[in-house]
Image (cartoon, rainbow, N blue to C red):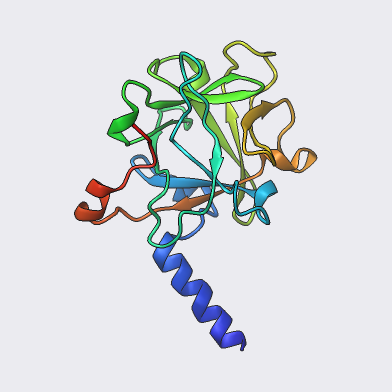
Length: 193
């Protein structure tokens, strides 16, 4: 039984990609998926989508269901900066002109075409094992101390002033994704036109 469980989890990692466990895993150009730890037992709101809603000039990023295997859900690409921070972009061409993950305010993490502003730069804090926080360098229109990306049990992603174990919503797992085969990548988009 133990061997069967081990084989299942190893095959799942091969299918979906393994979890990041150190900053060395987070490399420039790496495609990742963000998993909301607070929603671990809520399959409707587990992964950060890049199919933003269009009810604002930027658009909300929401949590969505586990897209299964092979992983065809929202993919995010890390762009490592000289100071060790990251910009997180969607490689999805259907999201143009919105590419950069953006800390808009305490009730909205969104995407923006403005890539050079502090609200689009993020630091990853390693909590333990495969658990992380994501801290923005600034908040666009909310309180200035609301910097941690916060998954919520209603599927919204907002921001919190507290990160880590003091706010379970700010805990994330980062799945390191393998590139999709070209034929599957061409057919796959988490955005609705």
